[in-house]
Amino acid sequence: MPGIVQDKIAVVTGAAGGIGRAAAQIFAREGAKVVVSDLQEENAQETVKLIQQAGGEAVFVRCDVSKAADVENLIKQVVATYGRLDCAYNNAGVEGDWTRIHECTEENFDLNYNVNLKGVFLCLKYQIRQFLEQKSAGAIVSTASVAGLVGSKNAGAYVAAKHGVLGLTKTAALEYGTKNIRVNAVCPGVIRTPMLERMFEAKPQMEAAMLGFEPIGRFGVPTEIGEAAVWLCSDQASFVTGHPMVVDGGAVAC
Amino acid sequence: MSGKMQDKVVVITGSGSGIGREAALIFSREGAKVVVSDINVTGGDETVALVKAAGGEATFIKCDVSKGPEVEALIKGAVDAYGRLDAAFNNAGVEGDTQATTITCTEENFDLNIAVNLKGVWWCMKYEIEQFLRQGSSGAIVNTSSLAGLVGVPRGNAYVAAKHGVIGMTKSAALEFAKKDIRVNAVCPGAIETPMLNRIVKGSEKGYEMMRKMEPVGRLGKPSEIAEAAVWLCSDQASFVTGHSMSVDGGSFAQ
Image 1 (cartoon, each protein chain N blue to C red):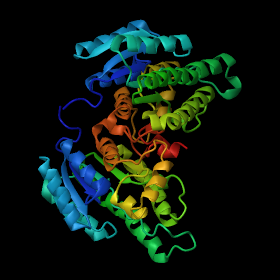
Image 2 (cartoon, helix red, strand yellow):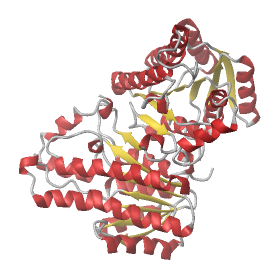
Image 3 (cartoon, one colour):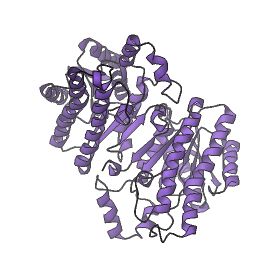
Image 4 (spheres, chains in turn orange, cyan):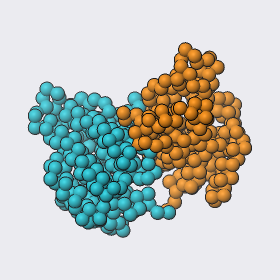
């Protein structure tokens, strides 16, 4: 049986670890050629190596998603390497500082905005331009969060940016619906990623608190988000667009 | 590569036509043994024949989901046939009177919508979850809600109420059994080319055109597109997805 994204060209941002790495590996398992992108070259090269060792095809392109020139170059490199673009998973993100709104610095707000929201906007812009240039279908998934659906104490800037990702996703879906370009988002709950481990190292008491947030009684693993993102990019999701898919162990059903 | 539902046993209600029939074929394509259920025996038998013709395994059990004893017998029949239950797609539904407004809706129409579209899903979840617990196993359930489970629709009051209710029950069941590894989700189809939609637009091209215009993607969905979502949600690939209402609507709800 061929994979669900057989022979498609996929770009994954934030693919040096965590959810992005898992997604890149699943794209490859399902037959795609993968452009692995991140700021962190060493870990991203490790992702490329893991894919190649499993018999897949991947290359690394460095990109800071908050910089338009970087994102434009990323898409250009994808096309230069593999000739086209079919799928994109815009997953690069930062958690910033964990503070209440009155203590949140302007720098922290700007960092969240620049990477988590503007970064997704820039990716959508250059990816959709490429789809239109190819006159082809295309599928995009962006990483929002359950913090894109509900508020979360101590995360005002992150929550604002992630809510914004869902707004962008819906708008892009409507704008390009008749061009067969689908745009969706995944909303992870609490996933055991390097981002989460950093948070637990800084504030160990957070671990039990965050576990209490998960009705399913465990944290998610990066592959569980990766599977959702790859499925949404596949033709099996051909009538799904503008949708925030919640992958959260039931957290927002409460 | 084996299918994503390899050797699982699945029950699909309302699988004598439309979305349910496509789901039976796709569950089977992915390796599942399928219990096809419907009140329409002819349609159900046809679905079984289609699954078998494609090399799959299926059996038909007649069931009116609005009747508790029939649903109980359905689940017992599934276990008698295949030894266990792993997944369920509670998809049986009726549209009722699609011209009635809130003030012209009859009590019969209201009761019919609730009996099949809401209480039917409850009966199914009740007996399916009881079976998962009896097996001491994990399980996955997907219920067919609707775009009308998320937004209002003029002249659809009873249907809208029932489909909103499905989403509520889906979340409650998900929370109640999350720690037992029993996942419960819903799909929310937009306008899909089914026999039901054909009845709603009375087969008129003008009606179809109106429906297409409502879809941001400019076309109607196909039954297989809902079925793919239901099968994915039932698979282990969706192991962290529960209590979720997945819109499969060509962008309608994003508006």
